[in-house]
Length: 369
Image (cartoon, rainbow, N blue to C red; front, top):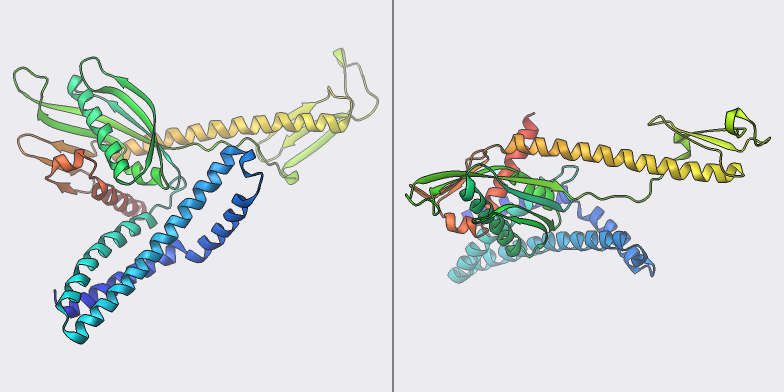
């Protein structure tokens, strides 16, 4: 590549990085980091371990994101210096070094650009991944185990922590199902494009006659649920009515207005408490009951939303990828048409290009709708 072409490529990469910086907004991230660092410094942080882990995890993710962005900007500046050396002194070594680094930068900037496309409601969450063997008998169970290894190797390549929750082994070979949590920033947004049905075509190692077999495995990806243990209820959302407590048969048991009825205006939930001796005690008890009801309502809504994500993912991913090992070797994504011929590399966890293509495809379909 000519020197002028290399300089033009660097300008294009610089423009791409500026676009990423505009989306990431480093200044707002720095403010959030400063606020999180104050929380981390608090002596009582670990009194609430769940919140502490959430705070430290978020802080670590933000710091890593800004560091990655800063390193890319620094590397891009260094490449410009190399190109200046090459132009001033006809330095072939500097030009060759710049060309190699430009190739690496293009790959790294493209990968970061894909991350900026993850802007869905749950995309930042960790992911719960379930792999289930479907049609195809023992071959499907074996295929499910192959895909489990593929995702575990992919996570290992990225130094992502995996927490296995359950593995159900098939009788002859492979697995019936497996579920794990991927502890990584944007794990759900990243892996959600893997959800759907995966198909394997090969000569079955379990068929005595050596016939070709087609088998299927389903992948389900859901965001990790973050359960709150407290519900804040603004006073403006409440109507408080007080009245005389009553006993069996309507008998009055208190001549003061100590009974309390709380109406949660946004949901219409009504809670009444009259068993305590004072209005203050009855209101406090009613608030506890109302919070419990709102927590349960939120849980039911969250469950319904998770179920909609399942069906949404399946509609995206029905027959989403084919792995062909016979009569030729190819892995092809049926949504994006991205394909590779090195099936061994794919099964060893080399699936970043498939994931990136899937994220871009999903964003394009969302923009078009």
